[in-house]
Amino acid sequence: MAEALVLDYVRTPRGKASPKGSLHSQSPTDLVVHLQNALVERTGIDPAGVDDVTLGCASQVDEQGSNIARTAALLAGWGDDVPGATINRFCASGVDAVGQTAARVRAGDLSLAVAGGVESVSRVPMFVDRGPLWSDPATIKRIGSVHMGVAADLNATIEGFTRAELDAYGLETQTKAAAAQAAGAFAGSLIPIRPTESSPGLDHDELVRPGTTLEGLAELPPAFAELGAQGQDAIALGAYPVVDAIEHLHTVGTSPAMADAAALLLIGDHAAAERTGLRPRARVIGAASTSVNPVLMLTAGQTAVETVIARAGLRPSDIDVFEFAEAFSALCLRFRRDLDAGPDRMNPNGGTMAMGHAFGATGAILVGSCVEELERRDGRYGVAAVSGAAGLGVAVLVERLVDA
Image 1 (cartoon, helix red, strand yellow):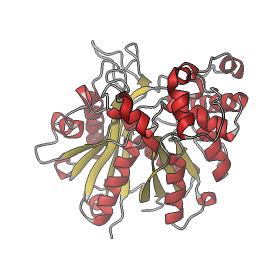
Image 2 (image 1 turned 90 degrees about the vertical axis):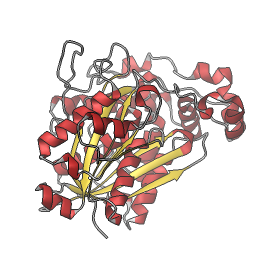
Image 3 (image 1 turned 180 degrees about the horizontal axis):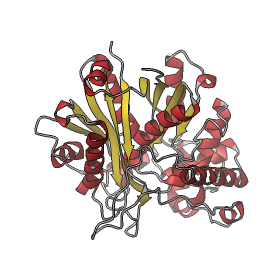
């Protein structure tokens, strides 16, 4: 069986998911094409030699509909012979695209491929696809589907986490992200969007808030109490009656910030590395896709991490870097506690609560960031994972290569 090697990784900055955000003027295909051009420029690859392009995207409608992976490949001038596929596993779409592509390389179906993700939340807002999971009362009642924020508060209540603990994690991730950004930790992969007449451009992650304080976080009101009072709490408690009432503790400061972004990884086998002259940076050992109760929902990313580590015959203590999508503070505290993943190993440069969550792109960003951090600290194993809606989770396990 072939090895799936990470040959390069690029991403855009993460912009605020708002009409006032610096990437709002960029369409989702603009973001992907920008990175495709950067990959060619950085690596010298012939796009005609790419066997497939697979992108994760959570809201596949309007500008993100009609198989954006194939559309972007055509717009980038990669030729008629380069296929493309767009997959949806909600917030775990990007990490799943990497995992699926790596599996196909290991199986010999692909030699050189691009995997990643994209989401322009400012242009294609969350829930705009109006799928039955969000908009059909009968489906919601039958499944017990609730908003992710209500699920986060349910998890915090079950685990007994306090508001102070959640806020402390929110401060920690902002502090890490600000320090990493100031130190230029992302310079190797971040491809700036240059200013034009129609775009202000962006050369950094726009959502990082260096001035965040515990006092400021403590003043923020609960973000999901009103949703809970409108019937969401009743749905959650009806499906999971282990607690009498849900404590609404998460705020905008302890929730993932919505963002616009794209990310791409170049993945190939050893033959592709030799053809392109690129030095393999890591190999993808494996991936795990899991699911849990759709009301608890957000624990699935951790379950996927535990699964992929066990399949590889490793233990959590063997992992040098965990890049875990910060789907609310409570899930991060649970992850850290259960896997004994301290601040030095888990999201060492901050996470999605500080830098932004661009649904389909986030998982690909986490895999690439994991490889970069392993290189910085001379580590060996890293895991990137994301929890998604309806109780889905995906994790990818990578091993840094030395003298490949």
